[in-house]
Image 1: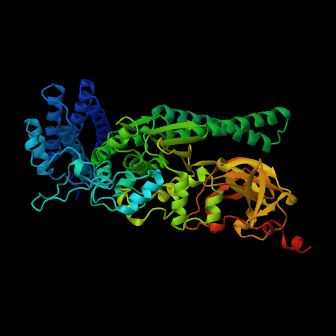
Image 2: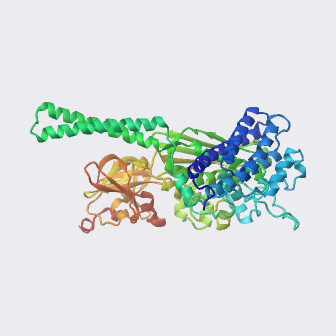
Image 3: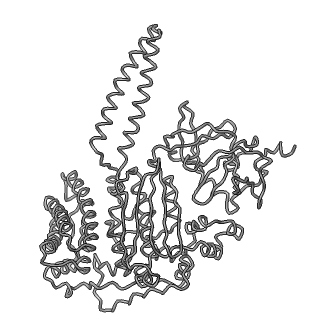
Length: 634
């Protein structure tokens, strides 16, 4: 039986509020380390921790109160000038906030938290007494460690990364010395300088170290009760008032339509009645559109709620690696669909992890390259039209497109022909290929047990795209583009014969006429020249496995992260905002979902990336695929 019987609602309210407060405390602590004299920051941190302690006391969470009280006393001494902020003290404080997150996990399970690790409590008491250097847990100046934070990086990764970075011979990072046999056992909340990157991320997100990494779309350690809590949304009351007002207006309009219907059924069909009907239908159309927009806005949440966990992760990873990295956040007020936030969490963590670990250089390398010791990783969000753009950029080594192609060729991931036709953008996108890095690199270096191919896959599941810009020696930028919401998708309606299909409008660049005499075959692929660029042609009939009935009349110039191509179609019906309905229990390959048109017709929404993947390494079709068999015979 739960220790909080009858208090479940109160407990959930506390956990939601306390988790936000703790994330804010973590971010302010990272800022405090840069500005140790900022008394205002210390006061904010003190108040946040005091609020958490008060809620824990109301729930009789004695062990959580004990830990919060000791940490709060340390904050009090810092803000009163009795002590000064040091890296060692910050390590102890951040270890305490990680332990508080662990206790939140236990509270979520309906049980009282177990006592904090004795070594952590001893460190807190030693810090309060000004004797931290004599504490039982070793708090050391960080030593540059291997990329994983655990075993040294193997020569295979050094060779691979040297190729990617374009470096002639990057100095190998020093390996971690093995712990002596008499060393004390690992504590529940180890010192950040001794943690692996995976442990750092787990603690910063409130995950247990024993949790096993799973699919990126489902964060580590999530249980059924956490899933239920994640479905809740905080909505501004003004937005709910707008929805309520629109609902009332629609109700009044419905009553007016009912009255007009009765009049018409009773034989009234004069001009005034028909005009009133037309006006009422137009008003209803406007109100329903406004209601739809208002409801969609209730799903939108500031992306700052996603960003707030990352400064702590970046700080701990940088300290673990002996680097000086500042994570700069921008556009935190940008709003994004709530359903996307959880699915974006792990991909962004992986990109930040790579930027801190592999993108930026060590202070020694930066000085040798004429750069400042402190490197900058930028995480930015902004709205562009009907899309959200996320940017993860660093000012580090950068990547060399030519060396990437050579490495992909060496691993057999691309052919010589493909390598010769790749531009710089396509070459940089090779890092997203499954198998580009070895299993050891994926599990050891990434820190999350996933590769860049999984990052790309998760972005594509959100109907988004990811692009790379990089310059050797200057840095790398990852650009993620996402639709504002997953509920409504702008589509272009195309035709195969008389059958309509929908393709995402975000991939469409323009519509071109196709003249069969202008179609050329290059390397066994049907192509057209568009403004001097050779584009492969993919007939929609071929992608769907249908026999062509006529020569395509039009081509839709489309663009994905990897390539541009022409989708050959028979006709098109215009643009429409599709309300996506998923196919429960049965999903044909290449179909993202279905939508209903204004005339009631059901249309399949095509998953172009999945259809293109079926083309294989050849990535093209012969010219004959555009011509029906009977016409080819003639």
